[in-house]
Length: 110
Image 1 (tube, one colour):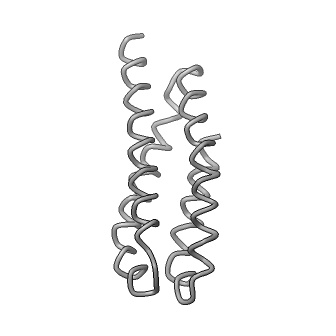
Image 2 (image 1 turned 135 degrees about the horizontal axis):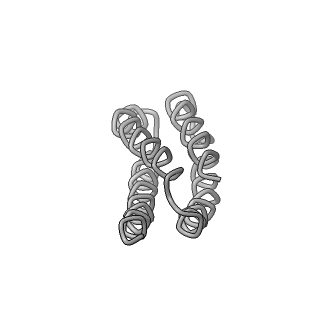
């Protein structure tokens, strides 16, 4: 039980860190050039989030609920930021594949 609790706390910490990292990367995008510069790091961060999502299935229900709660909080912030980014000329084509993958991963947490 202790291992699952510790694993759950780690998952919450990891999810918070992954979301913070992605938000920071997206928040630094102001034009097409910065979007292109952020793309490799964004891909890496998205892969890390995907790995975390696959670990979620092994968590006990109450801990999974806590992680899902964090995901729901982040989802609204993410969509707000994504909307702002896609409105910047030249950025949408660069970030949209990453945004779609992140949306897919966020959906898998539910």
